[in-house]
Image (cartoon, rainbow, N blue to C red; front, top):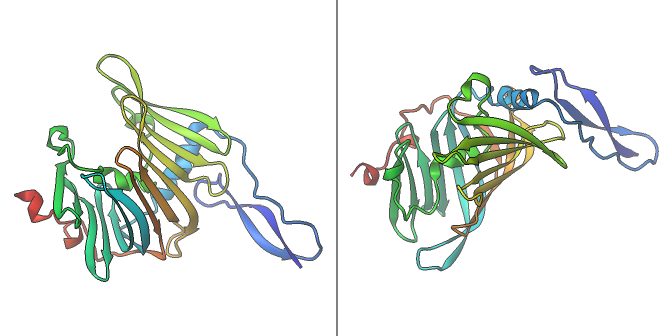
Length: 280
């Protein structure tokens, strides 16, 4: 008895994605590899991602082990193996709490107005405000307001949402359809602000997110793997998430044991409250 992949059409809401079903069949042929789909128009690729994200109807909660390393201000590298709990509520409410034996080691957070980062090693909060670049402390090691983008949980702007000097283009590379968010600076130079790498295998969702600086150097990159459907509403979510900040020499990997929607957690819940250290 062997396993074989059969390609069946999953109609679902967007009617485009195809899923591979693993079934048992008699015989001895080797397992077939998953099918890599042909590229599709950019608007269709973006619509698949955004339709899936639209299934997020409340606050998402994930928990699981987290491992990685960070580089402190004095140049020392610290590795860690922690327990992580993540909350996300669209569009900007985010909390990622990392503890060891109940003792907080790292905290990333964001709400409608503020975002923050805390490290026990330096016993310091670094805080900023959305849309106010000058409020960003130069010593803040990473941008907490970007993490939920790196999880593939925010929709890709399309159509009339692309305004001003920003536009989308598509580039097909190997196993991916890259959706590039381009913008022009004040000097008229075209910059790649953000990259979404969409998988050409089922379920055709975000596998990588890349942020670059004005010189094209990677500031933050995430990789999203092991997508599985949430039982409640068919929302597909990654269960292995890796983030890398090359300049800051930081790396983090979260392996989610379980995702769930927690209706009792809203935007004014304590999970998203601005720390007093940031208000002062």
